[in-house]
Amino acid sequence: MSFYGENGKIWFNGEIMDWKDAKIDVLSHVVHYGSSVFEGIRCYDTKKGPAIFRLEDHVKRLYDSAKIYSMEMKFTEKEMCEAIKETIHINNAKSCYIRPIVFFGFEELGVFPLNCPVETAVATWAWGKYLGEEALDEGIDCCVSSWRKIAPDTMPALAKAGSNYMNSQLAKIEAVKNGYKESILLNYEGNIAEGTGENIFLVKDNELYTPSKDCSILDGITRNSVIKLAKDEGITVKEERLPREFLYTCDEVFFTGTAAEITPIRTVDKIKVGKGKKGPITDKLQEKLFEIFNAEVEDKFNWLTFI
Ligand code: PPE
Image 1 (spheres, helix red, strand yellow):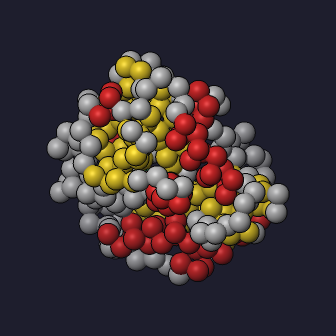
Image 2 (image 1 turned 120 degrees about the vertical axis):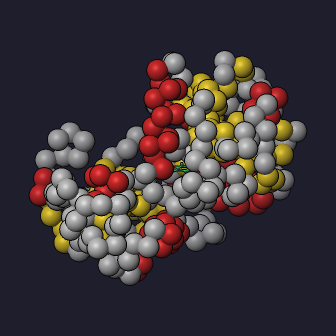
């Protein structure tokens, strides 16, 4: 119960209900075949009140993910945005993580999903620092996973589907069992893809590099925000294929994600990244992003939705 609180409310198929009443059938399609798409969004408790970061962009990506899997959405994007705001409001959550999820429910079993009902839920909860309290300042220790990222003609990486995270789970379990905080996955070509729940950036000679969208990655909204902020700071950004060894020879590496925000990586496979601590460009981009999260500066990209 501590996860969500005794009085936690869930928005489920258009209705607000107690968390403990938002139940699904054990024979739901999603339980057997992993047929879900979801989002992860953060709301920040700013000086001007709670604000959701890039709400419409997250909801758009949810609809794109559903479209890829022929899931017919039961609500409009606008209604989803309202549902999210309502869930935050009813839970009296100021700073929170938001999880909209859409999945095939119960009607029949068998791989073909389209006769099953499409169910939609929104939950919110307090989620602190994804990769540990010290991670944002101290950086984390990572390994390159022996598991490859799903190849483009196996599962679509651009869809944020629940089933993609079975691949992520293998890589995460491997990392944790071996004493690392997180894994970096290579793609089918052997080039850098991303973390198990994060995009990745590298800095070399004051230029910023990140794998391009054809490298089997999620088109992260934090990734997109960091690219925009870096360009705004006059930093050159290159989206391209990046070989594994670049991780060992570059000056800085960091993860981005809604949950991870900007998390520096201090070692990869026990090799120090640069000086083995948060680098100046990582620091600068963290500062710029958090200024926006906390509404301390003008929201010039129009990224905040106040509740
Ligand atoms: N890649 C993957 C595989 C991924 O799961 C995420 C988000 C990202 C990149 C970054 O995307 P964005 O959040 O739009 O910047 N991972 C979410 C789920 C984490 C979880 O453990 O659950 C997140 O960060 O919310």
